[in-house]
Length: 259
Ligand code: NAP
Image (cartoon, rainbow, N blue to C red; front, side, top):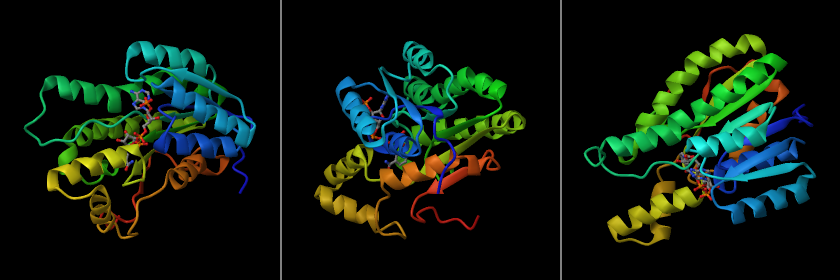
């Protein structure tokens, strides 16, 4: 399917690896020029080069921490007039409800709520003025059903979801859509880190921890960054202009819901 976005320009935050990289690759495959970001310059440059070679699109890289005001200013300046924004950052650490103090919450809110909001505030006006735009926020399945060990994530991402619900309807008249993609378990470094935690806590192998988690998913496997990226590129396509303010679960059926 021709997504109809060849020649457009996208900012994909936190995209040297994992789900962000999946989104960047799928947009590049659709002919979209990219501004990519991550903290580690080496992996970022390697990924950018691989994408240039594979898809022949322009790729600009900005190595910085996207959750800081300085990092955001750097990325926004490099982004310039982007048509597409994909927000992403690392997820907060696991724990139990009584572990976290004010500083932990502030960090999680900064990374997973206030950072995407800062990018939307900076880039939505240009999209609205030009009459076309697409925003996809990478959130989590924890927005629909809480993950007990990820209380910081549950809290911060639900806050973002509330902001998007209202904002998406205010920018839609100008041809700009905002939607959230809610990953369930995907095979990335983040999933490995969480599985390693379970393996240590339960004194089992990493493979056994993975198998145990995969068994809880109706699809009986983890999702892939490629599948995730394809869904993101579709939401950014011309075909998705009537999808507004939605929260789309990509979780292999793991979240047990009727609607
Ligand atoms: P990942 O494989 O660990 O990749 C994270 C990417 O983001 C890397 O490129 C990393 O590069 C970059 N990054 C992290 N923190 C950053 C920061 N502060 N500034 C700029 N770049 C940053 O993670 P992932 O699995 O793709 O997860 C992406 C998001 O989806 C996370 O918020 C995660 O919590 C959420 N999520 C993931 C899953 C899953 O199963 N994978 C499920 C639900 C939700 P650097 O480290 O070099 O910065």
